[in-house]
Length: 121
Image 1 (cartoon, one colour):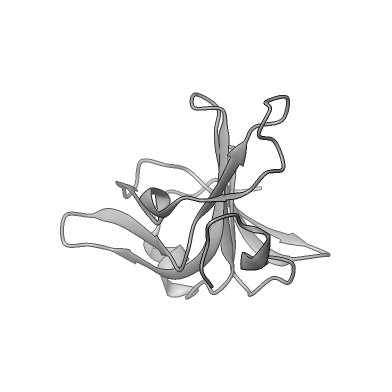
Image 2 (image 1 turned 90 degrees about the vertical axis):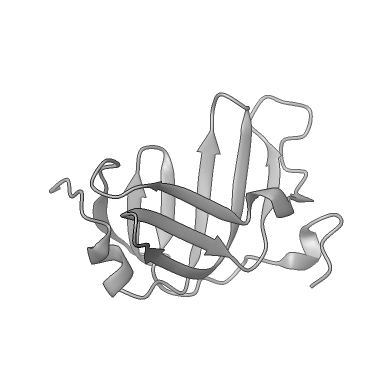
């Protein structure tokens, strides 16, 4: 599996799926459907979500308890710094894996805003 660095390649795929971020330091998982992804004039990758939900990591009291997390709707990091690989999965199609994080290219079923406490869909 070839490791890649230029996120312009991901932007060109026009992802319509969702992102799942594992924040081990904060012991949370964040996910949400992609609204847009771009590389800005300062060469930063900008991922914007339609909505964001978070839960505690496995082993925490809030594991599997999704709550609205509007502060996590935008993610930003320098282009060419965060390596990623492109993978095909049988159940959810093509995805981008970067560290413990996943970005699905195509829309994926099962991401239900009704299961997120405090989220108005």
